[in-house]
Amino acid sequence: MKILLTGGAGYIGSHTAVTLSAEGLEPVVLDNFSNSHPVVMERLAHLCGGPLTLEQGDVLDTPWLTGVLLRHQPVAVVHFAGDKAVGESVAQPLKYFHNNIGGAVSLMRAMVQAVAEGGWPRPPALVFSSSATVYGDPATVPITEDFPRSHTNPYGHTKLVIEDMLSAQHAADPSWRVGVLRYFNPVGAHPSGLIGEDPDGMPNNLMPFVAQVAIGRRPHLSVFGNDYPTPDGTGVRDYIHVMDLASGHVAAVRALLAKPGSFTVNLGTGQGHSVLDMVRAFERASGRPVPYRIAPRRAGDVAQCWADPGRARTLLGWQATRSLDDMCADAWRWQSGNPNGYRSP
Ligand code: NAD
Ligand code: UDP
Image 1 (cartoon, rainbow, N blue to C red):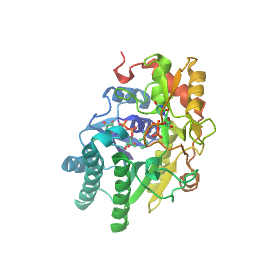
Image 2: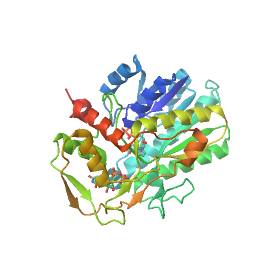
Image 3: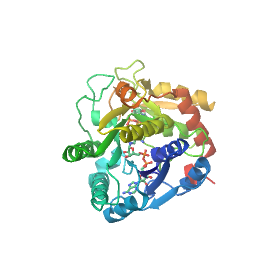
Image 4: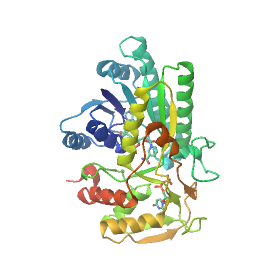
């Protein structure tokens, strides 16, 4: 049973590939390496007990993608491929509308085409990487899936539009099975320390930044605001171990294959942790100090955001099991073993 992973060489895709493989499914990795490194394929071969099939190319290339579907006959597609830097999306919105929305349109058209050509068995099953960013600034926490959606930047806008496109396609052709997964804050790494998050340049996200401070690549962390209405004044998020997130994808694929229909679920732990909680947990895991300075709030940040993960538990039989200490320990193993990510010697 092949599962096609667009963006499968990236952070979440690579961890999902390992988890699918451990569960007896066969991941096929499709990537153009625009935000990942080919070395990941060697690491995946090591973790999966043999090389994975790689289709190197661009999701924007619909005829090629149709050929990939016809050649591999995947039972489901997980669509990770896309650009994800919020700040860059504000500076270069067209890049995001083109690659994210254009990529999703291209993939869906390729799926329609592959079915129409009669070579790909129905029903099309598609899992999509959405984000808690679609909730904008939530009025209350925890957040359930029926909260109103909004966007505050072009990246978030693309997620919202793609969700709407998927629901329109499902309405037009109810044989489609669509699983929309709204991730909260994925962090951590595979416990082997062989694969992990490898941001290019200055990390935007908290955990990779903290890891780089602990290893000595950066002098200190800037804590963006300590005057939020939260217990210690710093921002609170629902950090989820990337291996828990990966098993959420396996559960979503299995649910789509088991019965017709579509769903949208939050993938989070249901627990919030502050920036300072994260700093302390990382110091414990690494045994290194993480110096920090209080800086002004970052534009667009919300005070607190965490999931109600109840629907994922009910619909998918999935829940996160790993703690903040596990997330930090695994992130530190990856960071200390690969101080410069996949470019490390
Ligand atoms: P990532 O950048 O590590 O992985 C994305 C992969 O897609 C990369 O390997 C990149 O080379 C590839 N890619 C991009 N455009 C492509 C194209 N046109 N054709 C083929 N390959 C292409 O990102 P990630 O953290 O693994 O995120 C995966 C998905 O999850 C993204 O859609 C992202 O928006 C979403 N998401 C991520 C987070 C997070 O915090 N990491 C949170 C919520 C949602
Ligand atoms: N944060 C911070 N310093 C950093 C990066 C992030 O204080 O260098 C804070 C940020 O303000 C937020 C939390 O850490 O409260 C998580 O930020 P991240 O960018 O990882 O996730 P998101 O804001 O997208 O949920």
